[in-house]
Image 1 (tube, rainbow, N blue to C red):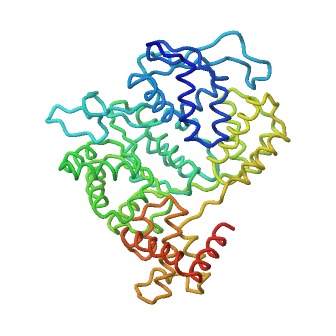
Image 2 (image 1 turned 180 degrees about the vertical axis):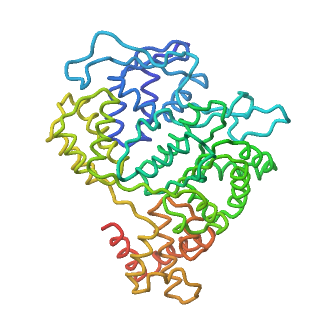
Image 3 (image 1 turned 180 degrees about the horizontal axis):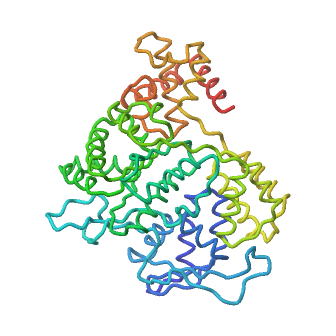
Length: 477
């Protein structure tokens, strides 16, 4: 029975609407027009190339799931992109362009299959999808994360220069390992991947791999469960350039740290390059083995700072030029002066501004920028860290700043520590192991017990509930 494309898309939207914020649904899904369905290929029309690229970057997972639910496991998606002028004020030109051009590619960003190439007995590749074989390890790098797209400024000059030196001679400089650290949204992942992309461009034969610490932990856990730990270890020891993102996630995971310690030693001793990123300098990392931290300090530690005004201007101009758009200098300076926390927020503000202009057919003016930024800044909560929570809790109870680290059973200290763990679990993205490692060097079970204790006391003790409510207000101020 032939399926009607409007019904298929309507069913997809009903699921998507329940899984994305209302503003995002209105902005990115309501303008889409279903065009046709041919066998298992659904064609949709979107207003611009920018619109298509944003859907592919942000919403490909939910599009994939809903389409496969409606059409079947072989579902494919094609885009008809209306080609208009840069800002979309004059209406579309009378032709369209299709994406993807390769009809064999069901959806962008689908899972990669990346077994290793070896003439010996095959070692299990933790990235492999069973039943699919390829020759080379896919580096897991985003093509846009290049040095050309990374704007240099005083805030990142040392890190970028060191990264480029490593890319020219991986394993052959004093910067091994290269550890890039800084707060979220400042470009650590971009810079680390830029090194990998440049290495592959210069030396395609080198095995480069980017992996997040959380992915590494998951793979190690599965390898242990399946009795494949040796294969896991051997696979990572064959990498020429290993890029490990968010290494602070190893906190409190002793077995994972031990395994990575052996991988680190092997790669370093055989002249291979290690690139690490972290949200803190090694000296501030909690729950990490000292022998591992000492190795992080063997090479170069380069930090990324919040970009200054000139660098923010350059980032915006680069993004605008890349997308083929036009904004007045006045608007660019206004956005750069009002969004000054990190690069991710800056680019997000620009995307929101362009979306408002395109969908409402409004020219991008200072007034439109001011309206958008007012909503964005108002709705953006400041980042709450475990350090900040500890500070607020200690100040509230009149305790010394380092009291939560003390090994004591004093009731006031234990209760304050439990409250700090409770808020860290609810107000940060840190894992239970990371929270425990940073607050009193406890394990994840202690954190779970603390959260349960606080919840029970809130329900049964009015005074305690008032303490918790007061502290929450101070944290959100």
